[in-house]
Amino acid sequence: MDTIQLTVPLKAEYFSSVRLFVSGLLMSHQVDYDTIEDVKTAVSESLNIALKCHCAHTSTLSIDVDDNQMKLSISGFGQQSEKETEDIQMAKTIISCLVDATINNDTLLMTVNL
Image (cartoon, rainbow, N blue to C red; front, side, top):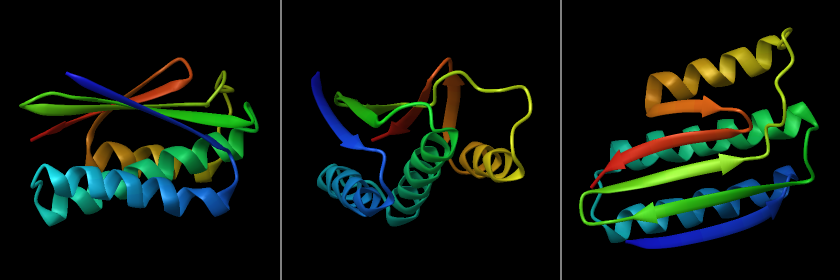
């Protein structure tokens, strides 16, 4: 199993680079186009949640790759308040519709079959 970690400042100008990195990694494992687009959108939405929560200055993307699947975790959410904004609720809904994902504490976890 290979593990890749990428830590980025929680600034919107870096999000496209993270999306491009994830896309390239998935393409190198011959994942279909629709799945790549879904994962890229989920990654963007999770980074947007972290940005809107103002809980951290950085987010760490950790990717574990083996022969059958890729597990992505994105940290930086901090403690979620009981009253979430509509934007955050919508982002979570988008993520859950696109990928197999869960949010534990301050981390979003998703799995992509290769």
